[in-house]
Length: 127
Image 1 (cartoon, rainbow, N blue to C red):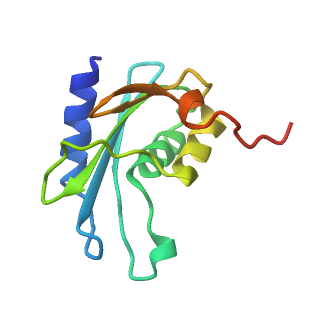
Image 2: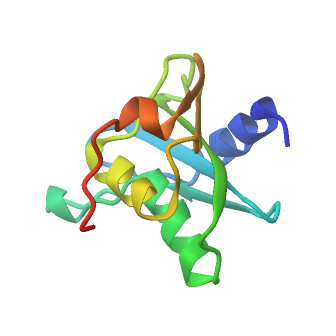
């Protein structure tokens, strides 16, 4: 799966976003090690702390279907369908990624490919 294809799937997922408060749609496409793809979008709530990001939606969907090994995630975000600027994962999403992924896990944004280790060099771990 090419990065461009994953980004296109993330853009499709963003079309399902519920962003009634921010107007900022986010979509994610998660590639598992066995080649399956899980998508997610952000879902806002008037009680803002109950909002869930696209990245966590995709990861939780995958885990609920039995997948716990991931290869890459593509993330897009923007207002009014403009996904040209990079949309970086938040700290909560990075921590969820770190629960299931190694430092070399690929995070694909519109401005390039990065690793989880680059975004989260000092991750929280219980061991």
